[in-house]
Length: 275
Image (tube, rainbow, N blue to C red; front, side):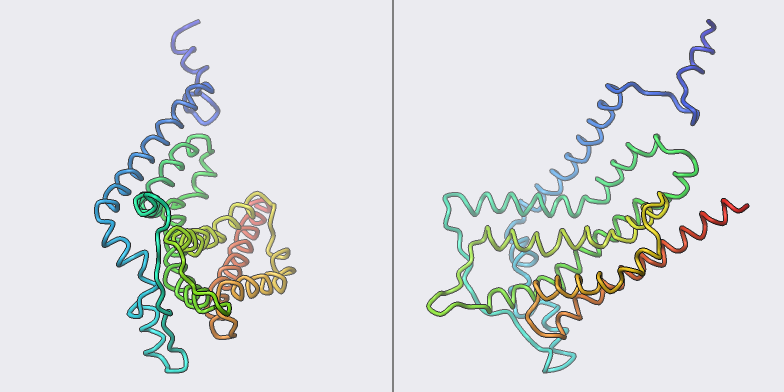
C-alpha cells in the first residue's frame, strides 16, 4: 500500500489525524499540566501578598466601608446596613498558614478560569464537527464572562447579606467567634456556586441543541423555578422581602434569558430541518 494511502487511512471523517486512546490521555495530561501551572503561578502570587489578599478581598465583606454597604446606604437610609463586628480566630496549629495556601489557590483557580476553560476547550474541540464548532464559537469568552460575573455577584451581593445575617443571628449566652477556616469555607460557598449558576444560559443552549430541553418545558415549570429561587434567596439572606428579591431577581432573569435562548435554538433547528 502506498504511503499516501496509509496517511489517508489515518485521517478521520473530519479530515484530521486520528489519535489512539493513549495519545488522547497524553494530550489531556498536558492540558491539565498547563492549567495547573497557571493556577499555581497565580496562587503563589496571591500567597506572596496574603496580607493584602485577606484584608482587601477575603475580609472585605466584613468591613463597614465595603462597596455594597456604601451603595445601599447612599440609596436610602431604610436600606442601609453594615456587618456586625466580630473576631475571627485560628485555633488549629498552623491553621493560618494552611488557610492562606487554600485561599490563595482557590482565588488562583477563579482568576485562571478563562485559561483553564480554554485548555479544556482545546482538548475537546478537535472531536467536534465543523457545524458543532461553529455553534460553540465564542464559548470560552462567554463561559468565562458568565463564571466571573457570577463570582462577582456572589462576592458583592450574596456575601454581604449572608455575613450580616449569619453573624447577626445569635443564641442567648453564645458569642459568635467564627474560625478563619469556617469563614473561608462559607465565602467559597457564596461565590463559586454562583459562578456555576450563571452558566445556566450556556447549559440550556447545548441541552436545547441536543433536544433535551425545550422552551415549552421551561415555561411549564417557570413558577416552580421561581419558588425554588426564592427559597434559595431566603436561605442565604436575612428574612426580609427586599433582600430576597435583590438576590432572587437576577437569578430569575437568567432563567428567562435561558428560555429565550432555548426558543431561538429550537426555532433555528426547525428552520434548518424544513429547508
